[in-house]
Length: 357
Image 1 (tube, rainbow, N blue to C red):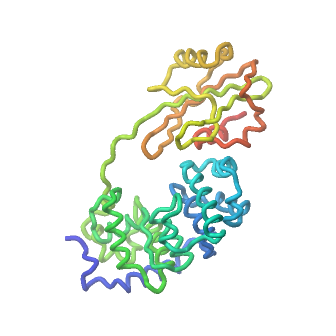
Image 2: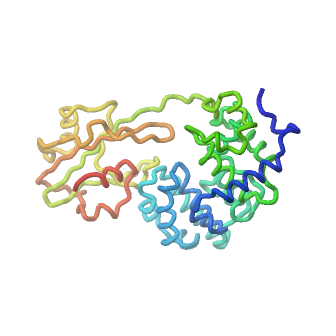
Image 3: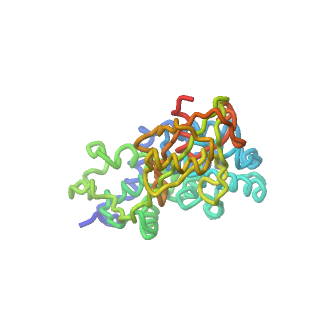
């Protein structure tokens, strides 16, 4: 029998009080928690989507230093933002960041909105982000539902609705609305996310330190590892990218700008050959020769034998880097010392950082 959140035995007010009290004693010291500026909160929330906090902090600080307000961000070019974003991945976030900044600058006179209904209409802002900004900046009573909240509440209540379906958000929002502190929604939202992240962790949750372990459905029924429930998704399509890193003896390298309408549009890369599977050296040499006649020499070396895996939302990309040092130059080559001024997709950016130029 699942835990009934509307039953008399469950004190909703006490639940929020205990959670906020725990938060005040255990909250993490994060830069965006020291402000109620909706612009800074929005920036942090967009950066932290699909990103670890430890990774996101330097990017947040870099953006705030260069673009201290939404008006300054609105004057940036897409290439500048993509370069600033480089290494985070999911570049649609960066493009929507710029779109939203321009809308706020023009239509809201540079005053970032704090109202949920206005926020939800802006590019790149969904229910979670709108709830977070309105709550943290203006104390609006809008519960946040992120992965930590899904996990904590599904275990606590025993709710077995798959969390990766549209139906689940509606149900979890309904439950969260009944639990959120009406006096202090901002701290409640921060608290429930931190509690899910620190105590009710995905793997090896700290049940002995949990304030609610006596009433937790998952713990009582030994189903902690069962929750949250996820609907099985179709197998990701696998693509194989073979990048040719052509380095001349004049310390130049060929790069190309992606112009196709995809998530890497307007980013730069090394010449690319896509294949249906991993290529042998002989097959790769033939394809490279066809792409660059009389430019590839015998010294075509595979840098990473196992390939670098890059998981995207609907596909998995395995990247291979083929190094070729040549005495010839190409019109699309740039000086190696200038490579850091161009924005690259995350897997290419990671390679550039790791390769001993």
